[in-house]
Amino acid sequence: MKVTSKEDLEDIKKRGLTSLQSDKTKVKVGLASCGKAAGGDKVFAKLEGTLEGQEGIAVEKTGCLGFCAREPLVEVEGPEGDSLVFEEVDEESAARIANSLKEGKTPEAKVLGRKGNGEKKYGDRKDLNSLDFYRSQKKLVLKNSGIIDPESLEEYAAKDGYFGLWKAMNKYSPGEVIEEVKSSGLRGRGGAGFPTGKKWEFARNAEGNPKYVICNADEGDPGAYMDRSILEGDPFSVLEGMAIGAYAIGANQGYIYVRAEYPVAVERLKKAIELAEDRGFLGEDIMGTGFDFELEIKQGAGAFVCGEETALIASIQSKRGMPSPRPPFPAQSGFRGQPTNINNVETWANVTTVFIRGAEWFSSIGTEDSKGTKVFSLTGDIDNTGLVEVPMGTTIEEIVYKIGGAERGSIKAIQTGGPSGGVIPKEKFDLPVDYESLQEAGSIMGSGGLIVMDEETCLVEVARFFLDFIQDESCGKCTPCRDGTKRMLEILERLTSGNSTEEDIKILEELSHYVKESSLCGLGQTAPNPVLSTLRYFRNEYEAHLEGNCPAGVCFE
Image 1 (tube, one colour):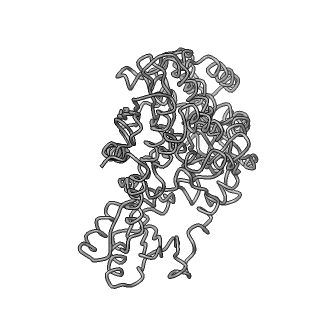
Image 2 (cartoon, one colour):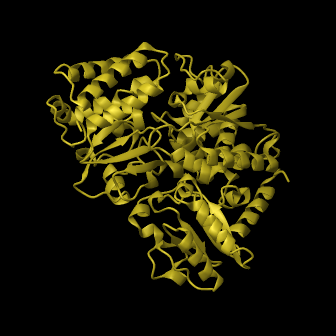
Image 3 (cartoon, one colour):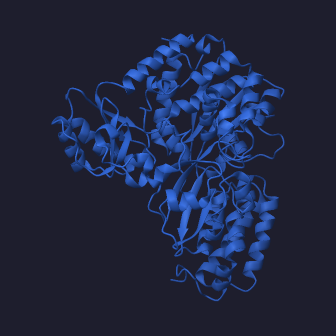
């Protein structure tokens, strides 16, 4: 049945609430890629097989609960909301959990914490949100991940899914939708943080039809998996955000460009699109408004340069993924030469919250110039690796030591923004995480990778690693990036192998500025950031390498 009224949407929400608040005991297994990699599929199979036919118990899959270091995670939720989350579950402990449930007993396994109304039954267990990893987080984008079945449109609607789209299309004109997004202060979550509302406005006002919207899910930074986890845990939020954007811009066709290395995300996107079309949230005459919007998935082959907008557009058109000079910008001439708007996964997923809660509410979170929250994949030399979402303005100190559980005195620096970002030393961990602060420190927000590095990390080797990645991923179209990064990499290889000369650091710095200022696209323009930031804060390590000494004891072995 297709939804044609708010009453129809309310009916779907009721069915979703019935599913989420059923009288059954639910056993939820985190089956995002992180959970699967840790053995979640085997755990799910063991639970499902042991509990097959057991009345009053349902085994379900969900997205990532965030605490990737403790996967596989299994939540057992009773009919009244009493909930325990078990960590590092294997087949043996899964069998114990299942057998305890069959006997009506409290499951015996390693408990991470309790959730919801768990104090009724499990008051002796720590509340999950009281744990350092979760306490400082505020989940807007990840609010449904780990809670709903990512393949259930009804459960998504139970969490106010598609009410933002209904409101945007029935209460606002396209121009008013754009003004609401502008008022919210939402900025693009994929790079430099360009204001989302302004970007939409440029595309709407550009001459030419048809217009297009694109979701950039080509997440290629080493150590980054934010977009993948959003698509795996809550794909409908991205579809809904894109439908709102398409309505505002006047686009009837959209594309999701996702790398083929994300098979779980691709499969769940396909399912979500199919369900949304079946219920009338995509396709012709969306919710009876007369607005049409079709969505199509395009899979990329994993070229890092295709994260750049013009290269991405070329790839969607089955051309070689190579950047084009700008202007014209995609908003003027993009896909098939027509006005095109591109935002990344996290940006689109934020849009529905703006319309459900309102622009004023959204803009009350974060800092003056950086509104809302930011999702990070927190990795590196810490105990609590995982997917985290914090208000903009949260300090690096809080993310690294409180959420990440890093040992004080052992950490040297962090890397943000992946190969395009830079290194920030521990002396600057009091910096708030926002676009301007990170840029002033010599890094960028990027899509949200945050790698923590301890004192045993050689920062010259880190720079060499990222330049090796960038040089390999350069499309080769422009000389500064193609040849400049090659020469930079050769110098870094000499430094880390003990064959450097006195002039190497000077030439490396000069080359970095040349490549940054002369490259055609963002890949080349940001490629020197790891080098420039490590030279800025850790020049002493470079100078030590000239003398054949690696302070971290990593090189020259």
